[in-house]
Figure 1 (spheres, rainbow, N blue to C red):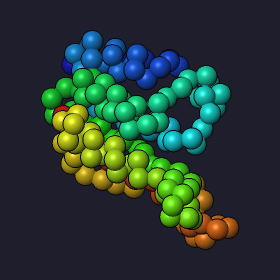
Figure 2 (cartoon, rainbow, N blue to C red; figure 1 turned 135 degrees about the vertical axis):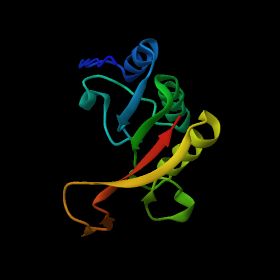
Figure 3 (cartoon, rainbow, N blue to C red; figure 1 turned 90 degrees about the horizontal axis):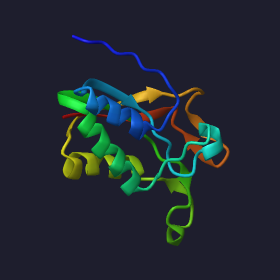
Figure 4 (cartoon, rainbow, N blue to C red; figure 1 turned 120 degrees about the horizontal axis):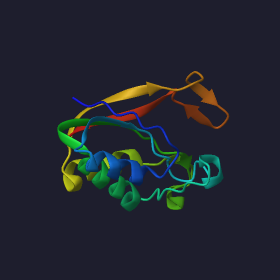
Length: 142
């Protein structure tokens, strides 16, 4: 068994391609940016397509990087914004659920579990909205 450590700031798709090229990996833990929550400057100039198609591209690359039976833990949530103005008030984006369905159905990963990552701060009412204090983590296997 070969263990390779590679820590470098670069595009995630380059890292995933490297994982694929060395024969695949057994575990990937990732937390991509969610829609309009961060600017490229906050990620050292890196950009990421936070549409369903962009997350789908990530899912395809993750699948290729995993060995059969390999697992990916995807920490993903959606910000609270006015996504559907016809409904009036703000709501949480459904992107986390859309991505889970896409990765399971189109990408072909098995959706094996979901979990919660505790966030800093405590849950409760903060101004006009509720803070959950956690983020969903979807767990898939190839």
